[in-house]
Amino acid sequence: MEHTVSYLGLIPLFPLMGALVLGVMHIYSCSRGKIPEKLYAGIACVGPVISFIYALIVFFQLKGMPPESRFLVHDAFTWFSVGDLHITMGFLADPLSSLMLLFVTFIGSLIHIYSIGYMAKDENFGKFFSYMNLFLGSMLILVLGSGPVVMFVGWEGVGLCSYLLISYYSEDTDNVLAGNKAFIVNRIGDLGFLLGMAFLFWAIGAGGFDYLSLRENSHLLTPGIGLVVCLLLFVGACGKSAQIPLFVWLPDAMAGPTPVSALIHAATMVTAGVYMVARFSFIYAHVPIAGTVVAWTGILTALLAAIFGMFQRDIKKILAYSTVSQLGYMFAGVGVAAYSAGIFHVFTHAFFKALLFLGAGAVIYALHHEQDIWKMGGLKDKMPKTYWTMLIGALALAGCPPFAGFFSKDEILFSALATGHTGIWVIGVTVAGITAYYTFRMIFLVFHGTPRDKEAFDHAEEAPGVMTIPLIVLAVGALFAGFLNLPSIFGGNLNVSHWLAPSLVDHHPHVGISVELLAIATSVIAFAIGITIAYRKFGMGAEEPEYTGFAKFGYNKFYIDELYNTVLIKPYKAIGSVIWKSLEPNVTDLPVKLSSWLYQKAGAAFKVFQVGYVRIYAIYMVIGLSIMSLLLSQSLN
Image (cartoon, rainbow, N blue to C red; front, side):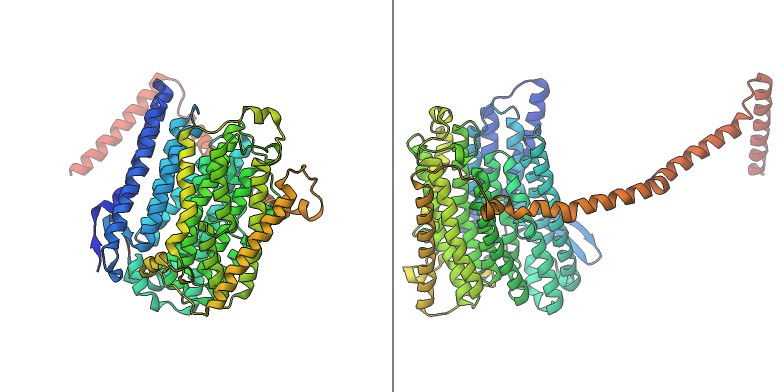
């Protein structure tokens, strides 16, 4: 049974209205005079906070309903109708979207609060927060959309906002190019999403193109069309969530301000692809081949990104590659039909990844925008709040028990092992060890040892309270969020998995306790090996290495960007240049030249009658009046 509630539309509306008001204020301030930053900040934060309050209301309302009828809907208006396609601007809240709403609005609010300190005195302070509100509002439309078309509105909205915010410092050409790269790569993925929607509507959309109707009619999909739909939708997910081969944009997205990186990596854009696959679990669960493709793409992306993360020197790029890698885990989870495990990792990852990015922002802020970890060191005592909170985030990312990342990642690895995907499990355990290594390589080089840049170290100090308080709150989440979905082996009942069950076609393998113990033991051993190697190499201080051999190959990201440029971009530009040069004279210029020729000839013809004598013009007038009189008399008769 569905329940209609009108306030669902307010959840994305508040940040969207904030974006509009802040944008107008910024335009006004550019022409009429400066507006206080406190006013901008207050308006910027109120929308996300109110949205979070409404998200809590949605959660508790759903919690009070029977599991089989946990659906809240609101159809705002009919958007358009074309033939059998009838699209309503509607919103759907169910267990899946309610969980997403909670952490998107909560963490989004904390990032907005943090940004007040980080972006202080920025000359475009109001514009920044306008874009941030628009970003959050777009993500909320994506999450709440009652069908794939409404989801696509938010999908494109977060793509636009990522472009605006990545290239925020537009005076630097590299930042603009990074924004362009993100925008273009995501358009490739979006084409897949659009084609997937088209095939889905063609196959079963006539009975309704919202999720509830599609799920009810999913049995009408043939295996072949189902596979096509799943793979095309996954292309869209690869673009948004930076999976092979469309992962190259996300590390370059570090060009934007650090709070933007936190919002993209923790609460908005990159989680959209995983959410979309989970939302269509009623199709993916019945197309095992598509699930296998998703799982293997995810785990190979996790491995590749982890290798790249081992050799990076930019603190934000290390975290960026860790995001790509963790997203690979999430796709491995949903690919083996452990949808709740994948979504739970999205949930826990949001806390510790937002924490790590905002902590990195505090370090960058203290060191006057220095991002090279080989120019840091010894900051532990200078920035104790940042250190201890980032340490908690690092332990969660590395999968140390009992931190949040351990429970969510271990659930994915256990599901892969229990469902017979042994290769995925082996690679996943390997990635866990590499993750521990590069995460603590970063921690040791930034906070331990002796300062490598004495001048920057001497001027470093702890970030203001408006930045450290969100770090502390996120650290609590990174420490305790994993306990929300404890498996039975730890005395829990998989509460989050049970909560998500009505929204997902989940698969919980029933195997002996020995399999689960094996998965846990190997994860812990991989963590221990990774952190031990990192400590021995960097724990007591280290000199900057000269990368050679495989290390140089990894530092340069296997030259994949250069490969894409050589194999795809340069030939495309060359072909485009040839086509343009052939089309320009014959297609583009021809109509222009033809119209010019016609006007010249028409002018020459009329020139004959323009003799400059008044008596000749009088004759023209007499002739014209005679013709008009003749025509008038004929019409009257």
